[in-house]
Length: 273
Image (cartoon, rainbow, N blue to C red; front, side, top):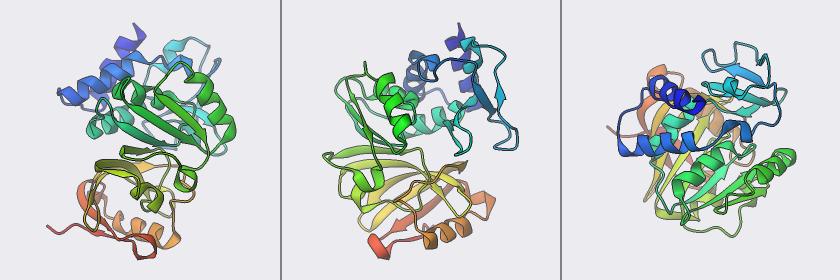
């Protein structure tokens, strides 16, 4: 009952179209029990309606029904780490159109909730490598995902520690970046896509969906976002550039941009129209 209401809520709040990618994504969300990933209640929840302006509130009790809403579940309030807004992520994951058999790099597994959803989407022939830099969260994710045979949880920094993974079809980052690290670029399949929070100096920016080109990446913005930073995938000069690019609110959604070059030569710019 909770799951049915949850899916209806996500469909409406995220203004989802009725198409195969959306329906497969909603089915994956419905199949994963949120209470399996959050520990014992009551839980601290944050409203998705007011960004960070509304303080988190403790649920009245440990009834899982409180989890089946479009809310963020607080994991570490001091660090700003949470299980992100499902109405945001259902839209983003549907837009990425995760295919059965895909090899996915997840940057920031948290406690594994969205890892499980990605696992359902890639199916038994796919594979998820999920990195989590916080050791305690990585341990929780590994326990939570023990029965997911197509998932490998690694404690470490995906931007600096990635090993033994080639032909990545999709990168999904749950931490803010200013660029695509070379460590990812060299491991991407030719048809790879990247779902990334491109964030600036104050950790705010826009989600982007990017794909490789001959000179870097072409991307489209998918809406405003704020994320904990991905250490190793950030540069101060590029953070300033991101902030400047997204100073105009009309660029936060459906705006094309390019990420050109690699290493010290990376630059961000509006796509030619």
